Length: 148
Image 1 (cartoon, rainbow, N blue to C red):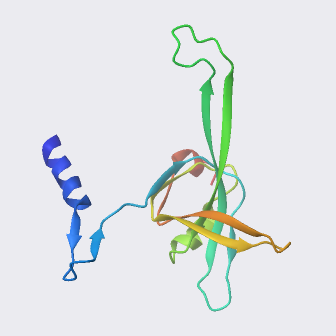
Image 2: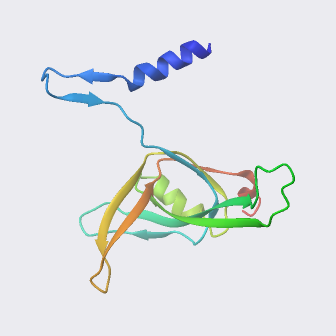
Image 3: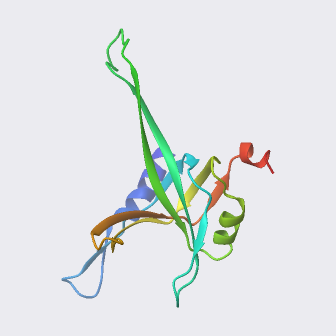
């Protein structure tokens, strides 16, 4: 069974040749899964001539103990919080996210479409880089539904 699953994955990652011998297309994956807390209530924005988007932030935490890996680890516990910008463009889902995602919730973001890297100019005319996670699906954990 493991061999069959490995073969399927390998088939998805192999190169595909086009009729142009100089052009090789390669399949790749750009997906993310996150489990964290929502840092702010979502906002819905619309740029003229474009579809609306729901945006919210999400925090994920990483914890470690100094001296980890040693048999008698007695070090201090450290924590790092990473903030992620989540954008929901998908019609229907953006409305659900805007209505039901709330600060402090723990949505499990599942089958997120992609990471998107871009640049923008801030109000002080400084060019900045931004990473946005484009969500295609959001699964709410049951602890959030008890609050409704």
